[in-house]
Image (cartoon, rainbow, N blue to C red; front, top):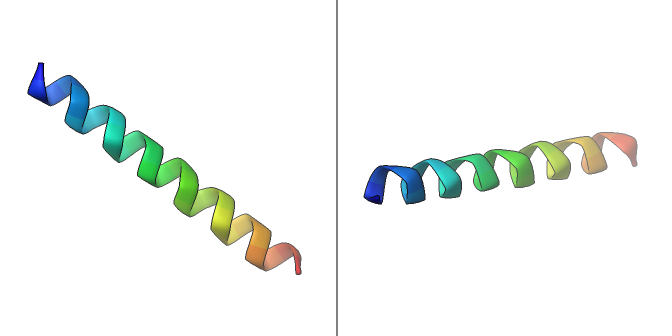
Length: 27
């Protein structure tokens, strides 16, 4: 159960990082 939660948090963090990078590059 803990592994699933960790994977989910990691995936969400990666998505946010990618979105922020793309948004900053677009400016």
